[in-house]
Length: 494
Image 1 (cartoon, helix red, strand yellow):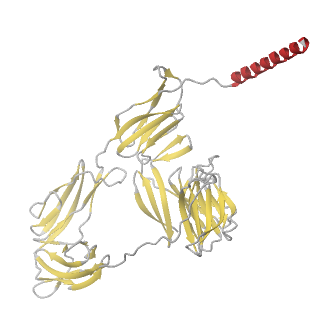
Image 2 (tube, one colour; image 1 turned 180 degrees about the vertical axis):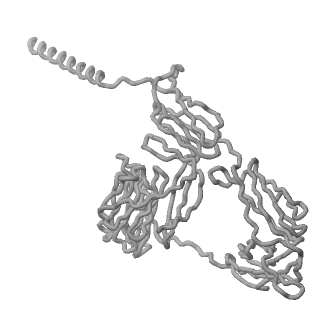
Image 3 (tube, one colour; image 1 turned 90 degrees about the horizontal axis):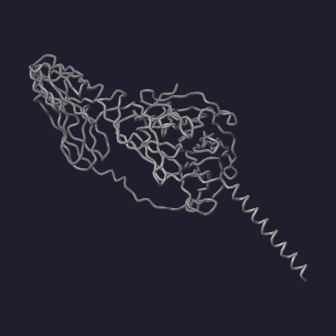
């Protein structure tokens, strides 16, 4: 018995020693924890910069004791993205006036700096030309638009007016011109250091009568009705090329310089046309359009991921009896909606992406396309799929060659896909006549911006220029841009 006990004790000691070896080995294999970041300071902070200026930012991380840690930032960002951008080395570039927050992440701890991008002086002033003559005693309102160097309108800059020929015409600071004597009047507009000049021909008052046509009219809210004003001299002869000043009174209506009238509210309106001191009025009765109607919800499709958690949807495309929609995830779905009250899931597609955004098909529903952002391999771009049988969707091909930075929107027109390139803010035109081998055939982008190319943690990007959405019809591409010269473009296609 003593021998048995002795052996058992030896075994127990050996087992304990082996366990200790295992624990020691695990502790040796575990990587040593680095110093914990307690605070991150981003500098410079609270500075003011000019549009187009570049600033190098630094991030300093400290532990709880205040000791500086030699750790580099894992992420730099600047927001809003349309005002500023920053590369992976902390070099920031600023595109237009506003308040910018620059942030750096070090050891999962963020730090922030705040920058004010100053409003630059207006670089130019544009005055709408006055092409017709102004009768002595007549008046008109001049319109001037200050613009920045990149062409953006400056609504925050005041315009001041003066007459270079005060004996011919006077002008107040709001731009209201009053004709005093025949001749050529020269009026100047100033917006800070920028100035512009416009000329108006003033003629003697030979008008005897002004007539407005139609004298009476009726329409619905939202309709555009065109009025015309004519002038005659004492002998009844027509006097042409005279400027008409239009005014309107009534509940809520607008009349434009060419006599086009539109009302937002029902009621009776008086439209007045004046040529110098002579005028005529017309009336128009506006009735409600009665376009209002209630919306009835006939069905709801709950969207969930594989774990049953709610899933956000991104975009949808309805064609015939089929509904296609994408998700802020990696899947797109197809539904049969021939019975709108009872939509039926047909199939789904999965792609390597953080977000599937836009989706559409050709009119015959044979070929479809969806866009990708946030792919794990950084090959985003677009995916063409076979939609001829929505119950059995199949990927045909991918196009990523020039749009690896991601594509936000796509629009199919004939056998071309017009897509937005996230990385450069440009329009790309992809020919998919052979869907298995798509190829880029055209590119276009705005150039009059302060856009800059920067290297970020997701790759090369263009900061300050972004093409958000587009539509193509009758040989024109309609482009919605978010850039330093934000605007809506119509792009003619040859």
